[in-house]
Figure 1 (tube, rainbow, N blue to C red):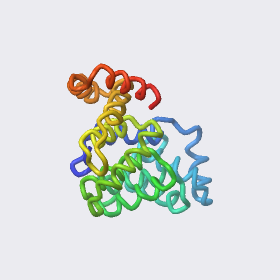
Figure 2 (cartoon, rainbow, N blue to C red; figure 1 turned 135 degrees about the vertical axis):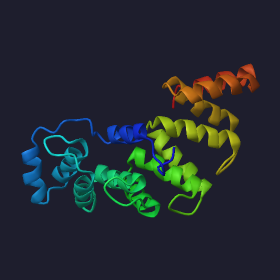
Figure 3 (cartoon, helix red, strand yellow; figure 1 turned 90 degrees about the horizontal axis):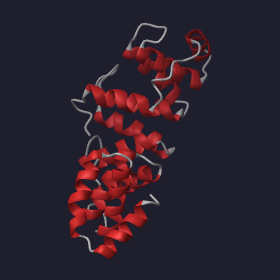
Length: 211
């Protein structure tokens, strides 16, 4: 997944992960409270402007309010500022700034931010490449149920990227992603399971049920 030249559908998915499909109860209330410094209202107002709910859609204004909330440690707003800088919507595209904001949200446990941080570390996007740190972020996100991270972690473990090679655990993470509907994981597992002995395949299936 890459943000530079980010596909429209990926933007939509990221907005959905941050709850952007939920229609605010009162835009006027959000505006009133946001101007008073309420971080949650500022975040919601950012969503309003992102989606054009009750206001004219304006990504620059959306990012302005996301940034206001993010500066008060509002975790979802921090993620959305990262999205803005990564995609160039509302601000000039800046990989370093995107990474910094994803890192802030990731430090608070935001699973989508953890995934984006892992991606950045794996590809040296906005930060130095660090496969070991990337693997750790994928693991944290995967343990929180992030689907794409389960798959990525499995691949990292199976290939020994960023740490020790572990075919059993890696296969289990890939199977866990496949069981959750990840099509690439399904395809990969159907191929790699042929290399597992019956006993190891049973171990993988048992472990995957816990992930």
